[in-house]
Image (cartoon, rainbow, N blue to C red):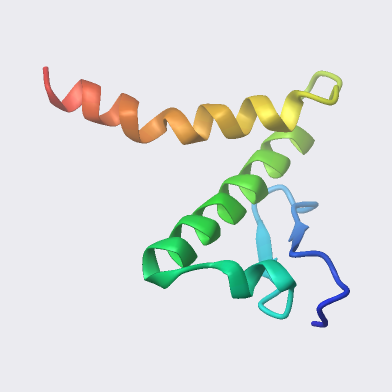
Length: 87
């Protein structure tokens, strides 16, 4: 991939497959600092892929906030899991 291509390509058109390709040639990649910075960026790329897949597979119509709503839900999952483990 080249620096002129998107930072992320998501193929979420199959019912059970999500392919997330991250462009390491993108200028943003060089701004990531340390392993934690890279891990956090990759985590967000995966959340974007899962959110797009979820939006494509829902039965109702998609509006501009649909993918954002799904990503917010997935970003909150670790907190929910932690909350249930405390009980």
